[in-house]
Length: 196
Length: 196
Image 1 (tube, one colour):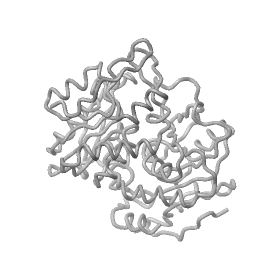
Image 2 (tube, rainbow over the protein chains, first blue to last red):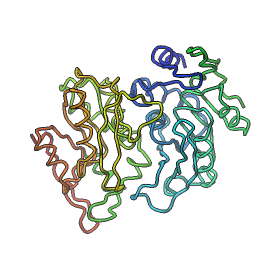
Image 3 (tube, rainbow over the protein chains, first blue to last red):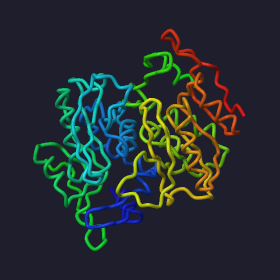
Image 4 (tube, chains in turn brown, green):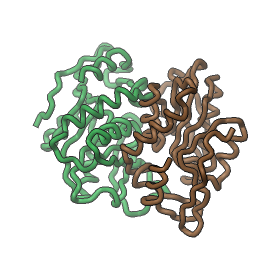
């Protein structure tokens, strides 16, 4: 997605060979018009998949997920990273390790909102080691729902998450795939679209 | 906002005299079309305030804030509740006690994205005791930015936050104000608009 890649080139900050900071439009400050275009793009790519629900994870996944939900006309659920007192005990839960934050979070989704008739699109801001996606896929399996695919805003192609998930036969659509951050420079790889 | 009140009447669950659960469209599952209408409504109410930035807080504030940002044409920042390793030390921070979760969070906003030239609209999902708004107002004061007002999706009118904030001369626009949850019933109060 050219608009996204241009934004990354102009505003992304390469902090190391593995860390790309996009706090100016995705992770902390959010560009709503870019999110709208991202939502339209996800909706376009999964238009024929009969999606009934989008599943994302707090917090940075919410903005792109809600925009995709708007253009697909389906509700969005965001998995919570800690159990809230106002959530009941009717929960699907899974553990997710964050390499960025060096901690394990329990993620939870209410059984009220994910049922076995659902066809689910997962959306998240980043795909690196794939821990969040694995946790969300596990929750979909617990609900016996169908996984239609995974929509990612920025994939770090040099980390193993994307390959592992595609190797499981899961469709992954990443709007920008970063091949390398070496020497402080962002190099994209050509979009693969549906690698499976 | 009638559409929102109807949604609360049909899907909101009164768990006690003080707890209203709206997990089916705002706090856990999100209704993107309702968020779009909420965003348009906030934009309409603050259209003449020359807003340059929206400030919200993770996680449930993000969806309405991004939609408001889309229709006002301004960026959205969401305050983070814990310091992330990829955020630098150039932060405005404030402490916020959550009565729901019975814990204090440090909330933070990068100094890169909030400057003294900004005219800021605060947006959050709920206003009850007002702790989150006080924390966000404190961050705006640290940045020496101008506060244009506060946009709230659901205000609990029977708790003190709204009165305290309006008494400080701050404009508060709540799209639905709940006067009472007694006897398991949601009673709205008429919208006051700008009470100050």
